[in-house]
Amino acid sequence: MQDFFSNVSRYPRYFITFTLGVFYSVIKPLLPLFENRATAIALVGAVIAGFMCLTFTLRAMLGLA
Image 1 (cartoon, one colour):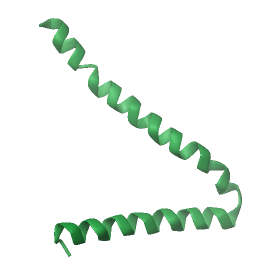
Image 2 (cartoon, one colour; image 1 turned 30 degrees about the vertical axis):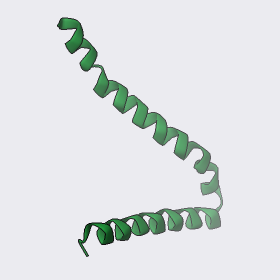
Image 3 (cartoon, rainbow, N blue to C red; image 1 turned 90 degrees about the vertical axis):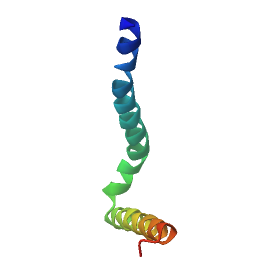
């Protein structure tokens, strides 16, 4: 039984490591785009537009609007 709890206690650390790895893999290729001002503004605008689109879609699907 001790092995079971030892194994289960490793899952939060795995989840945190996995999540940080995904964020690193997504952000690393985008960092060179911030060197040019025009692409940085376009990238920030695209992220904001994507977040707003996701928010409006979920609100409409869940009937919160």
